[in-house]
Image 1: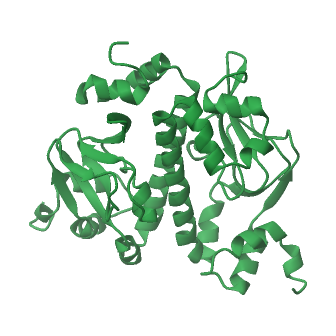
Image 2: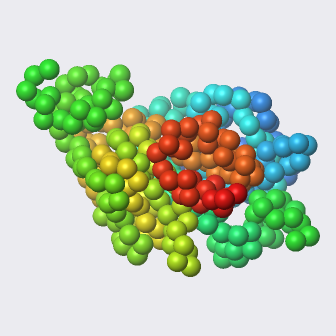
Image 3: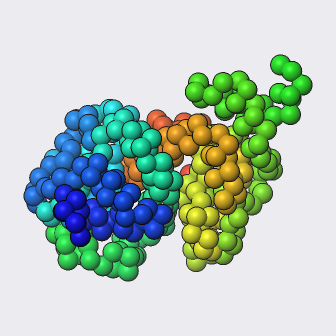
Length: 186
Length: 186
């Protein structure tokens, strides 16, 4: 490892090494351009009502999405390693309906409006890489949605045990319960 | 309109005319390369267990996604005009867990594996157009998912009235009820 590598976050470099279509020089060049930010547990990424100027991709940690309904937090998603954090209002530039808060210390890639285009021009391989990642993420979300609709809360819990067992040890039980549509004492 | 135009499906041309970044010549060139197919009400696009060789984008009509659970159809999505039809198994090339069936006569754009790349090479503007469309579709799906989790069946019905009022006149009530998680007589 030479001195140039040390300027790049190791988790980011690790993430980029998962793309065989990028050679080492490209990974370093891209890695140096991608902004990485660290958050502490409890930090807020987006508040309800805010128009987000950034979007995120999780390298490490867990970000929870929740709505505040009649004073109660209703958890709608947990974003962990290698997941894009919901950014519905980032594209529309409308006020966010939900909160995004770190459930654990987190390290994220930060995306800013219109910055993508420059990166794509400079590193054309990123166009396909990003598209495939988004399609995969989209498909997983659709599967999760369909599975949520077709399942009872009990079945959802068993599915979660199967697909994301780590989550149960990482976030408080009452947030899992809220996400699955069950009461904590159920 | 000259004779070349007449070779292109009018709904497809209408759809392409929604992209100001494409000039008339590009719209025609692209339109001639995009395969459009018509289906009759009741036609099946994908069966459970099948590995799909195609994906779809709705120009006209309505496609229903459902799972068969304990002999009962559980509706999980309705795809209408300007929506990509779920193709979770198209990318993975794994057997489909659900059925995709036309609730109305439908006209769809047909996508085939690896064909996209050729189109992108030939018409580079399509890269950004497609990415923005997928991102928008993804965001809408995430919003729908979050809204589904946070809502009661009654609230879901009111939301549907608000966001997709046409749907209520286009598909049978029991399918809407299944989708919203309510019983038909509720």
